Amino acid sequence: MKPEFDYHRFIDNAMVVETAEQLEAFFKRAEGSDIIALDVESAGFYRYYSRVNLIQIATRAEAAIIDPQKIKDFSSFQKFAASSSCIWLFHGGDYDISMLARDLEIYIPRMFDTRKAAEFLGQRELGLRALTEKYLGFTLDKRLQRCDWSRRPLTPAMKEYGLLDAVCLVPIFDFMVRELDDLGRLDWTMQECEYIARASREVSPPKRNPYAFRIKGSSRLSPRSLAVLRSVWELREKIAERQDRASFMLLSNQALLEIARQIPRTVSGLSVIKHIGRDFLNRYGQDLQAAIREGIESDLTDLEPPPRPRERHELLNAWEGELAKALREIRDEVAGRLQIPAPVLAPTHALYDLAKLRPETMGQLVQSEILHEWQARQLGDGFLAVLQQEPPQKIRKSRRRRRRPI
Image 1 (cartoon, rainbow, N blue to C red):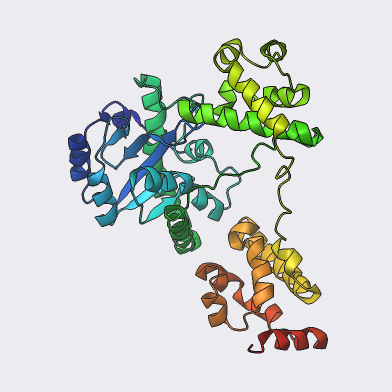
Image 2: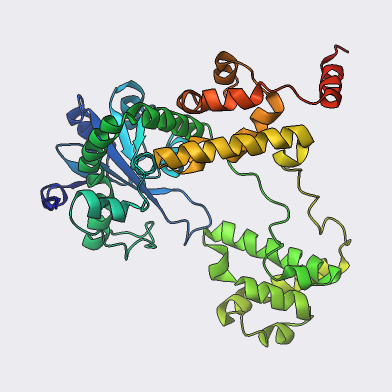
């Protein structure tokens, strides 16, 4: 039984950083730190735009809350992240890293993800709450998980909840590093974390889905009702975007479906739909009527999404399918022996890509970058024994024809 971690010395003395000068002073004090823990809060459940609303940060010496709503100049944070050699600690950090890059142009170069580390340690419970119980001897209170982090002023409970998620990562990191090192898996973890950080920094903004109006329950609508649904859904999105409020808080999906089914032509017709709030109807009743008319008069085109792209396994011929099956069996056996999740050892899509490419040497396997280097070293001998097999004569001939220069 590990002694309970005393987090009060961090929480009780934590400051709220609200100016660029305070931010610069914090990172001046953080110079020379070997690790810095970071956690980001957004209000995506309540707002149309999911953005960084709060940053909790901790070193071995102190903790602080950084308020992006107050600070306009993050250059000291940007410069520190670019120049410091410290390891940044996250739990499930891909989303946080991408938000920091997208919203604040802060690029995290080197990170350690405690969730990924828990996978390499063969742990079944991967949440931060489970890790604090295992390593620090207390349970995190997650009642504020769905809190509106865009709200100001911050309550003492909000401050403590946010800070704990960062403060706890520091001692958890120390415990995990020792365990990973004992198992010879620390290098594997750092390699995976490097890939996570790189992919998260380079993430592109999501593209608008023109078929997002196809919500649950819409498959039973007629084409005309689908056209009406599309129009009123687009109206709701415009209003939500303008107000920066979550769409469902303005008008529920159930209300959209009822409007599409009934296609009411008048405000009185809309008023009998119980899922439409009175305030919304008073403000936007005429706009709803216009959207319904637009749906009634619109062409019944582009209502169905295009056929989904074929999956990787569907693009394999029979021989390649057999190779992928053999690779999966080897992966599952090795993963079981190492007691780590099979997709961590090699994602299934990588098996299909290898069956298609068929590298024949360890050098080719590593250079293909289908697997990360540590994965290739663990699986290479078994995989290459499968991939070096000669295909049936018919397949071999067709493969030569595909490779012939045009």
